[in-house]
Length: 265
View 1 (cartoon, helix red, strand yellow):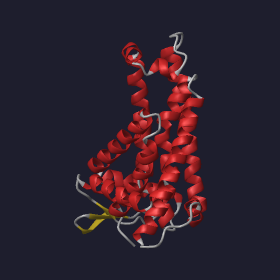
View 2 (cartoon, helix red, strand yellow):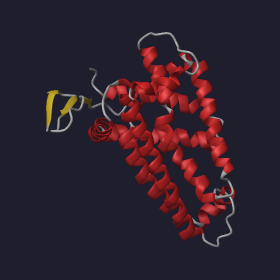
View 3 (cartoon, helix red, strand yellow):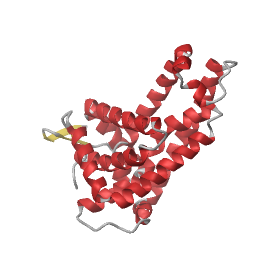
View 4 (spheres, helix red, strand yellow):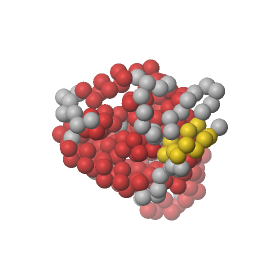
C-alpha cells in the first residue's frame, strides 16, 4: 500500500520488505544526471578513463572474436546493455566518494566496492549472466529461423544497408525481442545496483525498489533508458572507441539518477 507523506515521494511497504521512498521527478531530470556524470568524469578522469578504456577493449575483443558467428556477435553487442550495470559499479563507487568530498582511491580500489554487499551483488551478477545466456540462445534461434541459407557469414554481412532491407522481418523481430528483454533488465537494474553498493539491503528489495521506481517515473525512465541505449549505440558504432568515454560518463550519471530517485536515509 502506498502513502503520500510528501507530494513527490512515494512510500511503498509490503509484508515482506520495507522499500525506501521514491521521488517522482520531472522529465528534464535525465539531462541533469548527464551533466552531473560529466562533472564526476572530469574530476575522476584518470581512474574513470582507465576503466572506460578497459571495458571498451573487452567489448571490442568479445564482439570481434565472434565476428564470423553473427548470432553470437549480435548477442554480445546488444547484450552489453544487460551486463553494463554490473561493470558500472566502479563508477558508482567513485561518484559516491566524490559526493562525500573524499579523495580519489588508488586505481584498483573501486573493484573492491563489492565487499559492501557481496552476497546480494553476487546474486545480481548471476542473474544478469543467466539473462545474457537466454538472450544468446534466443539470438541463435532467431538467426536460424530467419537467416538459414541466407549466405550471411559474418556480422559485416548483416549490418549493411542492403542486408537490413533484405531481412527487414528478422531485424524487426530481433529488435522486438531484444527491446522487451532490455526493458525488463533496465527496470530491475536502474537503481538496484547503486542501492546494493550504498545500503545494506537484500537482492529482492533492491529489485522491487528499482521496478517500482520505473513504474512511478515511467516517462522519465523511458527517456533515461533511451538516452543510455542511444549513447551505447554510438559507442558500439564507433567500434568501441567512443565507449571509452561514454561508458564511464553513463556510469557516473547513473549514480546521480539513483540519488535523485531514491529518498535519502
